[in-house]
Image: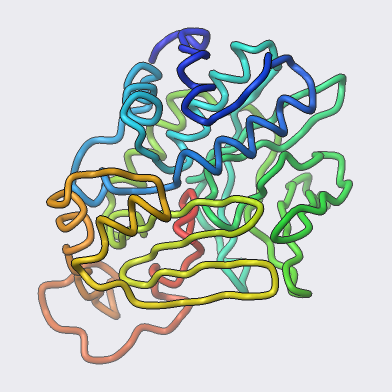
Length: 304
């Protein structure tokens, strides 16, 4: 992988619309975090198109910055970590287990997040969890962070596991669990390969594109398009012909129409209820919610 400081910072700042001189302080960390989420969408188009997902920094800059595309957690947070380090932040890369909504089932460590330090205080930074993630960094010491779209807090369990939780519309939810043991680039290469190629990965099975701003959170999952705004949520089905325009207007993605159609058009294979693997034979009965990987959180990064 490219050296961590091999980053075109000026191009990145222009890409996210960040004005001013960045410095290793909290105002810069918050400003970059918010601007990144608003301009670089969470998406898995390449996975759905069968294209390899590279975590090489040059490749990430070519795709997310020059190519004005998006990506999922490993791509987003690898790029963001390099940006922060180039400015002078102390950053560590961490692995997390995404928590299934409404349960505590064990999941693999297939999410990437960052620990950034500012003036001796540690912060969780994560620009790669999609529309359920925080818009701003969250203190790792347990102090609640009230943000547009919810109140985020990191809680510590007796075994030392840290849990990122969100309180939204009166309902609490655990998003993912992690420990502050730094992970290596090779760890993310393995998780990235699983997430982008395994037949049970939500990213392989379903197209998702997401973008978050303080005013609204846009979520495309399959053919369902959801817009969350304070006190309101709308859901509608997207017609085939309108997908390219939706990608351009709601998600700031200008991709060839044929790529959009291919990424969207591959129908999900049914899952065998006994072996839980894609099956050529017809499945006539629905899977129990706990056994259907499509009911998992947006994650493995977060397909939310």
